[in-house]
Image 1 (cartoon, one colour):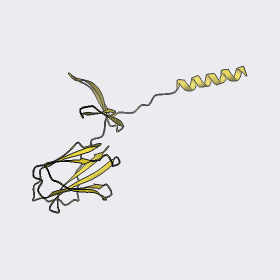
Image 2 (cartoon, rainbow, N blue to C red):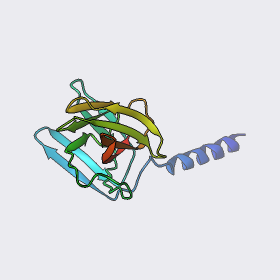
Image 3 (tube, helix red, strand yellow):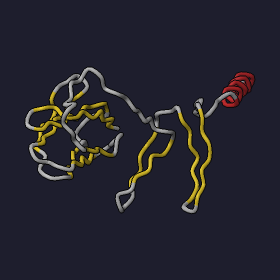
Image 4 (tube, rainbow, N blue to C red):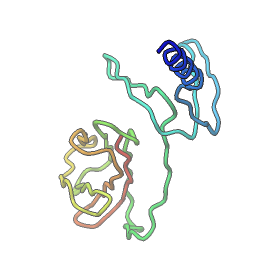
Length: 159
């Protein structure tokens, strides 16, 4: 009996000695410091959490979040008509802000990655807030129309 307990204790310590904490292989990273504090960062990883402050600021912590820049091809947009529009933040978690210079005749449609229409609204002001809380974390397309003619398409990452 004593021999069995000693053997079992030996194997438990041997197993505990070989355990490792979670680790990851980072493509690149470093340290940044300034008058407001310091931060360590990595690139090439996609797991993180977001913390929000009382005054609306947010910070992603953990590991670096992905940032995707893509050109959508195969979508016919109005090349001869001009539309000044910006959409931020992207990636987004709860809300998107759409800013346009001239909202007359504009509307937007939000589609999922399979092309299903999720939301359609008329743009009434120069700044429009689009709620994403109810959507799953995924990629979406926001299409801007002027009088039923597609003007611009944004690819949105919801996280």
